[in-house]
Length: 184
Image (cartoon, helix red, strand yellow):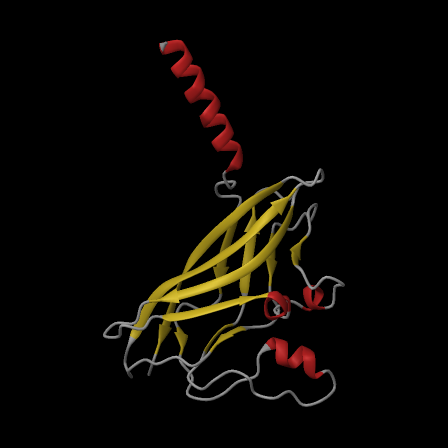
């Protein structure tokens, strides 16, 4: 009976282990240590891309912050990395409403010209690249933030996606970094 239990546990751990995400292959970082809250409207990367040669319309609500550059670093570049969406969650001191901001789809693709201009508009970091770092070339904006002056708040920016090998096997990816917003 003990042998059967041992074998069952061993098989279960192998099966569950093969379904888990790869630990630590993908890391994310952002430029800037503390991002200022700006009391104005702004134009997102998606609005710029969609405007073409026309003047883009401000689509980011007043009181926004911007993440200038997001950098993805991989230890193993043998698989494609596809980013599905980015979520920012920052508890605000003295407020019951945290900062929540998500970007995916065309808004995510607009953060990098090659992503937006591809046929699929997929946030794809291709395999085989000798350069293990990959950065966005347009800022991520989050607007409509309510924070008292003189407040600093820190939270997380999470990146969700998957890695796909040459055979089409996919492994989920979730990584995060700290993000700090400051209202002056």
